[in-house]
Length: 474
Ligand code: AMP
Ligand code: ZN
Image 1 (cartoon, rainbow, N blue to C red):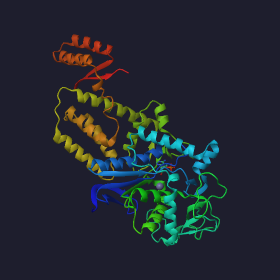
Image 2 (cartoon, helix red, strand yellow):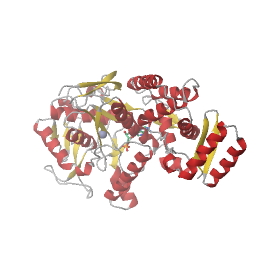
Image 3 (tube, rainbow, N blue to C red):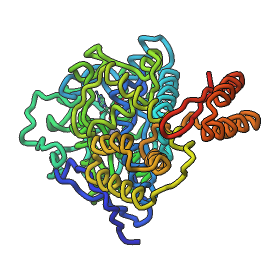
Image 4 (spheres, protein in one colour):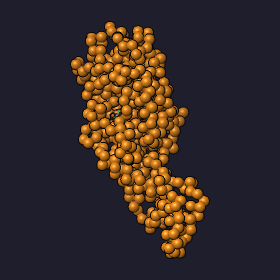
């Protein structure tokens, strides 16, 4: 089948343009998102990047197309990094296992479970497959063997296998870091001891040395894979050698994605990734959120302070994915208030007597929103529009409810939450109907009496110019 354009434009780091996403197989978008390294809790900064993949996925679906999303779990091979992203120190999972004196696989599975829990709390739709690096070793070894065969890789004197960067002339296309500008002295490897032919070559397979855990046999001796080859192997395997959209945080642009591109393209002889999307960093109180900066906030911390975790989702939506954003407890509290108000309003709008829906106005509003989102995911603009819709008295309540309900398929803020209508007992429904009638008859004494009876059934009624609404008393 031929390519299918989607009408969705997102900034592509490689071409540096707002480029249209296209379904290369004409059937569904093939999306790959770099997943977590499972050696510690994901902080809300990591979650901002994972949310980006959810937004792009839901936007593709909102535009009427299908999507297949793959997100890897890095449980081996991601070495410690310095501030420039150079590899220094140990494998992050193995180092944590040593510290906690537990098997590294137990560490990895524990943080993988917590990662899934966080995604669910943020209403992030699960990917189709979450391949674990440690379970994809065979595919990685095949890829490495192919790269050696085509002379893009070689076995170093230390028995590690290196990618020969100079065999890939377009190196640097994503990040602008061309090989001739990469000075020796930049360490891309923890084994920088002369085993490589060229300072910018990087390891595809690392000789185990003294390491005894998370190591596998290979044609080049016992060892473990490099982090970059993992993403090449998993993305090409699960998406059949073509990735329509590849997503990650901005720090992964170099060297992780630059190296992934070199490996995948050298192996396939083609441009494997069409669209590189990078989300900007989350700052907290002015500094990039990271363990080393000591300003990590977990989603659990947000819940422990009594906020709805979806308040964090709304904070992210209020900022463009391509801008750095500064989160604070004040902004989380404000978003929490907004979400709760919208849920309450939604219930009120749904319960008004006048059920008139202006479908022309609703369709236009939704079409405008889709146009904003298709223009490089302008979520802040849409949130501003939702805030004015909320207050717009020229739009009927039921129309507003319908718009919020439809858009929540994309925003996923749980706007319909609290819609306990189905749980209302017959008695409570009869009392509500009677009270509504009493109010229309201006019989306020009866209406008050019915409100007290409803309270005994744990239903709290309130009145607004738009009519009577109710909620369950917790
Ligand atoms: P890691 O688990 O360290 O491999 O990171 C998972 C994802 O989170 C990667 O895509 C990173 O680029 C991203 N990331 C790390 N720190 C931040 C941050 N402060 N804000 C946004 N994304 C981040
Ligand atoms: Zn990756």
